[in-house]
Amino acid sequence: GQQLNQSPQSMFIQEGEDVSMNCTSSSIFNTWLWYKQDPGEGPVLLIALYKAGELTSNGRLTAQFGITRKDSFLNISASIPSDVGIYFCAGLNAGGTSYGKLTFGQGTILTVHP
Amino acid sequence: KAGVTQTPRYLIKTRGQQVTLSCSPISGHRSVSWYQQTPGQGLQFLFEYFSETQRNKGNFPGRFSGRQFSNSRSEMNVSTLELGDSALYLCASSYGGRTDTQYFGPGTRLTVL
Image (cartoon, rainbow over all chains, first blue to last red; front, side, top):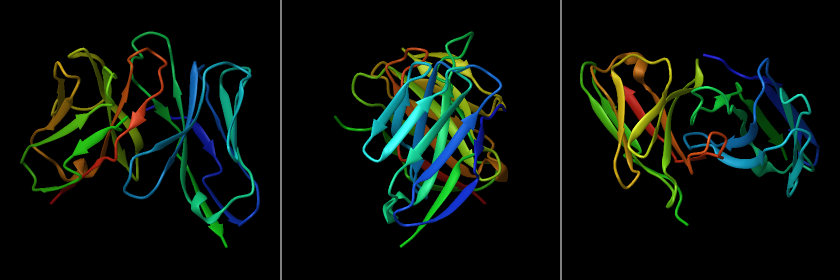
């Protein structure tokens, strides 16, 4: 099925470094969401974006909804070991029969070295 | 407010059997969506229920079905299990608007032998 193009696929960084990941799509989305998933657990919502151009922060996390509505990025500042996990972007579309269907990126695996 | 709960957390079945998974949404949420997560395919949408009605369905065979009860709890059923059905099954709940944020449960890990 359709997926968002998320990059990078993986990142290995030192504790304290900043991280940036992004998602692009050929389709427009009305809502962009960023989730973090630990192994064997469900995704946990980090940030929700509802408006083109919106820039939202949640602690050390900052995310933006692209003005074309076809992309979004997530930044993590001053990474710490507990940031380790898989980060997913997801989009929601308001058109057609799109109820309840999140379209996901492939995920970014983040490893933080102490 | 309690989060989304899923039961059971782990299941082991054999090929040909059927399985039922349960999801209780966040209080006040009326929409439940189901997803299958595998290493090869990532997170794939199965279906969504709102007020006991299926409003949307993904590209999965008819062996995958679901239902929703009047208290918004939802179940999904997989009949005639195949090895390829081994996956983490996730449900997510929301208020039900087209672009409402979804909150996920911990998932049910299904292993088919």
